[in-house]
Length: 640
Image 1 (cartoon, rainbow, N blue to C red):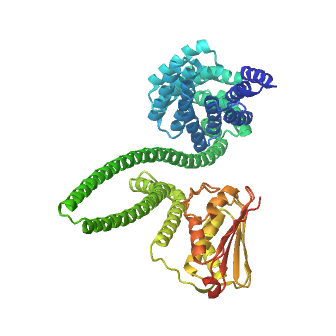
Image 2: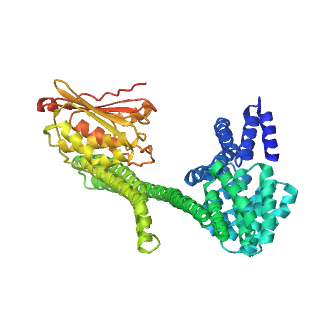
Image 3: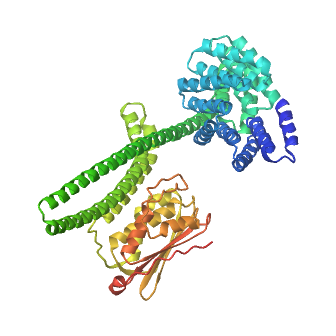
């Protein structure tokens, strides 16, 4: 077959190649195989991505990520497809590669197609056609025309769909691509089927089917088979319809093409119904309903995730523009501030000159000189006070900006998600059953917002002047058990097993409220970075003056640079990493742990291996005498 022959020749050429030659062949293989052998195409594209990074080749890396994004699209993983395609598009713009940008316009248009946003998809495909025309790339022009035709057919504009598909066939006479020709024939068949011209639709579908089989693209063959079977059914050719649809079911079951399998069961049920075989009709109809319900549920979830991903990217771009505007305003204010300082300095110089002149006029040199010296000293003291206040204001402003960034980034998304779902529900656009399916996801968003707000309020209170701690004797095990009960649903969601091996009583002398905040944040982090089904172990050790509490997880771990950043003495708001299930955080949690443990004259230590989990330990005093003793500097313990 043609496509297999091309891939075989590329594989032969790949042997012994290095550098840019190997990179080019890897990308060609990824493109050639992504419709017929997705596993091999994925492996070639991942190697191409790695090699492109080493060679600093933006265009080649964009091509590799485009292939990966398309493979995820074919697998129905639309959010991953969007992430890879979006990054590839930005790389193509940076490299000023119009051809690559045109290809990616088709990827993005396909994602809008899956959202059923056909007008937006048509806009993307037309942009891809325009860019491909500018660089005279025939294959991408044909692909863009086929995609425009497909989307016009979905919104009932069949004449437009037919015009674009025929234009694609005319261009393809020069390109000679069987796959693109098959695609165009399939779209034209859809048009004739919708117009009730079943004989013509059958003939065109058969042409498309033969081309798909010649290319060995089973996914495309499956997409044509159920259409051809439906054309036979509508034309009353029940025998031919049964043969085609039965074969389609076998092919789809063998290769896992669930959408095509669902449609084949549906049409075959109608064939048996027309033949009067009610038992067989019912059997296939039941199979269709089971598959269709599963596909609809998955499609709704994927569309929601894709919409959220696109919304977050647009939100990030808006935030970037806002930050740029704020920086320009800040620069203008600083410039104006300098001009004011110069003006005041000149005014002060003039006043000082007049004072000296008056001093000579009144012939009171000594007395006036002493007054001027005293005034100068006061001004210097005022300048020092102003400089100190300016530094404090700068620190406060930086902290404010970080807090607003945290609240804007981490709270706006979940709150916006909740608002959107409620608006849909109140507007009658969302069924109660659909709302119930989204309820668990909304609860997770609200829990995340609540946790972030609690940490932000605790941290803000700790920064206030006059913040005091209230130490007392209490049992550390009780605080741990209370925190575990608060986080129980989160641990169950990730199927985490908790081994609480603490001593039966571990009494410490500290502020119980602050310590509970510390424990809750460490346990939350352990769950956040644990994989599904992992275990979390808690144990304590009692020493003459201290009690040490340790919490171990089996999660992603940290490197030494991350640990040093967390444990350093200076104040910092670190950027929070995403958890193993894309959980977000504010970055305040571990800052609170460090601050509150040290305010209780305790110590913090971390042991971690990347990919093998983290052990987070805190040491707290057992008595008031130890508590009031000068605290020992926290040690940074790392196991590498």
